[in-house]
Image (cartoon, rainbow, N blue to C red):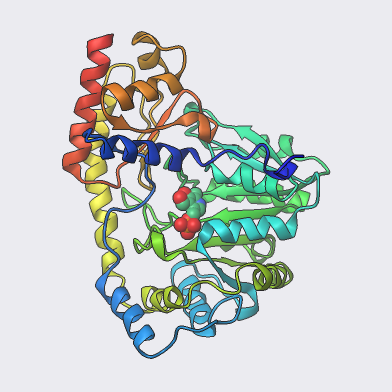
Amino acid sequence: RDLLANRVKTLTPSSTLAITAKAKELKAQGIDVIGLGAGEPDFNTPQNILDAAAQSMAKGFTKYTPAGGLPALKQAIIDKLSRDNHLSYKPNEIIVGIGAKHVLYTLFQVILNEGDEVIIPAPYWVSYPEQVKLAGGIPVFVESTSEQNYKITAEQLRNAITDKTKAVIINSPSNPSGMVYSREELTELASVAVEKDILIVSDEIYEKLLYNGLEHFSIAQLSDEVKTQTIVVNGVAKSHSMTGWRIGYAAGNAEIIKSMTDLASHSTSNPTTTSQYATIEAYNGPQDSVEEMRRAFESRLEVIYPKLSAIPGFKVLKPQGAFYLLPDVSEAALKTGFDSVDDFVSALLTEANVAVVPGSGFGVPSTIRLSYATSLELLEEAVRRMDNYVKSKW
Ligand code: PLP
């Protein structure tokens, strides 16, 4: 008798977490591995947020909260969306969940019927296809090349839509490419979504990490019509260095939000109470640390980007946001004797002691993803190791 349900039989563990685990294992054996796999800021959560969390516990706020989040937190999120994104929502259009990841999971559970299609532009974040499949949906990948800056066109979106299409996912700034859709590009994509009456799932978790003077623009800002069809997903993990606190949220259609809240009432009860109090402070308190962290990422990028680009056989687009680089290393892999980039990645780990994530998990098998959410010293050493390794085997 099968122990497991069919639904989880094709489920693979997140490649990002897998490489991080492997790097930790080697480290535990005393090997000096530099891990560039993790997608989390290397800064501590700002002190004012830690203090707010501690104070809430001291006051005894350690009980269940409403399933969709504390009213005060919903209000802080509403204020944030108004202040930063010029978007206006009511409390019944907001749900707070256990990180943006679980919010997305819950969203797909409530919007997808068996066989519904979700358009996922590639490269994509590893969890989208798995979450869609777990909800009975079918991921439909739309490929974008490095020549098109890893962004899909409205024409490509139109061609991918069928009568089964329920939604398209837009993740800008993107993990893994770091690319950002311009307002014009979003306008074109949104007009197709509106015309074809499909939902837009806008994952804006990297909103605060934009470089070279770029400003974030949410697709929901385009018009009331677009906003009505868009579910904005965001959270504090990347903006406030709060990955472990697990708070994210969705804003959008009240019927969808109610259904997500009902599901949460039977699955999670509520996001951790202390984390909710911490997030109220994250949004209502001073925002200086958000900008400080952004500046730190940008200055690392400026140093590391030219060095990475100089490695033989590495072709690198300069990211506009997030904290990842996605070099195409197909030539480097080939010239150093590997059939696939996945094998090249294994060799980088065991022979050069640098942990990066193979692009295959993100739908771009010619690339590797490396995170620059680590110190400049380690980044420079990692690039030096990869450079030496490639040159020694070329
Ligand atoms: N969306 C994208 C594109 C991400 O890269 C991540 C985290 O890696 C998330 C969502 C999930 O964020 P959270 O930590 O809030 O669950």
